Image 1 (tube, rainbow, N blue to C red):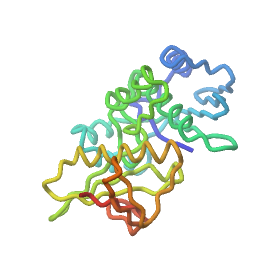
Image 2 (image 1 turned 60 degrees about the horizontal axis):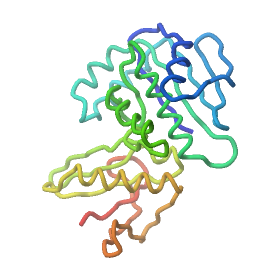
Image 3 (image 1 turned 60 degrees about the vertical axis):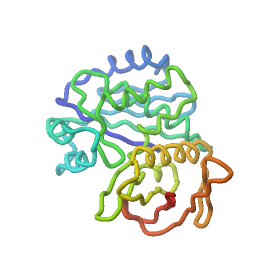
Image 4 (image 1 turned 180 degrees about the vertical axis):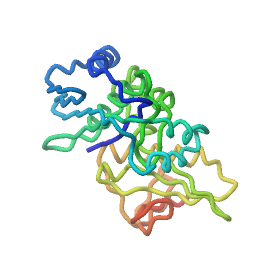
Length: 245
């Protein structure tokens, strides 16, 4: 199950406008659905999509706190402070695992909601996403229907330390997989490390591949990046450390 919260500047929201925009943007009609007030539950390709307006901000400043993690959006905290309501959006599968389908439907719904007036951002995966950023990556599914917008499904956090940097994923556990971390030197291109994690995440989500302690991975037969399972640095719990060489 995937879950997120679209932050709203006010509690005014037109559910019918959302279903119309969703159909126009993605070609998906939410006909097989139950709607009551500002709550909708729909079945799409065997998946359950639920969208519901909550006429209050996220409690105890939680969204504002996690907005600090978005190093790609300078105004994240200030914009998040303006939210006065939020829309819960969730997608789950019934029966057999359908991770890619769940992921794509979630991103499509969240992207459409972010495109509506007075939407400020998406609180998910330990951060708050900027609407334009999120919708830009979601748009890849228009040209490539099989695309998996990993940058919208996970957050790639950075923990800067005295002697190195830790780049970590936040969101893989929603797919039943271990979060991943890379310890990189101060002179390493962090975009390159993030791209590695993004590609590995795409691979493990698509096939629900469980990586294990002691295994290796790489882009070529010669490249062997060692995997170690140990206590997380950037995230709580056990994480898979990928040795950066």
